[in-house]
Image 1 (cartoon, rainbow, N blue to C red):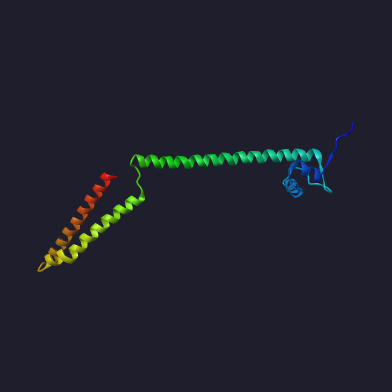
Image 2: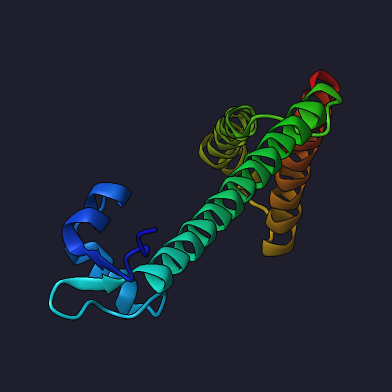
Length: 158
């Protein structure tokens, strides 16, 4: 009976694993098995080391796949939470808020400009500084009322 070989040539190892000799040397440098001497590897220790290397690679792949699945589930859960909040009226699109504030801002601007250009000068003629302040405060109060009314209307619609 013939004794099994104790050595493994780099060419045979490459054909068995499908890896290059350079990659085998890198794996050997990582400590999985002893590096070759003269292009020859120690058969038993090299095969054991390759099995260990492949097992660890498989475990890493499983771990990465699990992490990816977990991250994907978290992302889906966040999306569902947002959709539920929208459906229940707890969230609205930022665009809607922007449009509402723009509309309210334009309304308040028109009221303020009308008051400053027409109402205040007409009412301020012959008035004291304190009376003019009261007129201006009344204009401000009306602007706040308009804002409250617009805000209430918007909240009822959303």
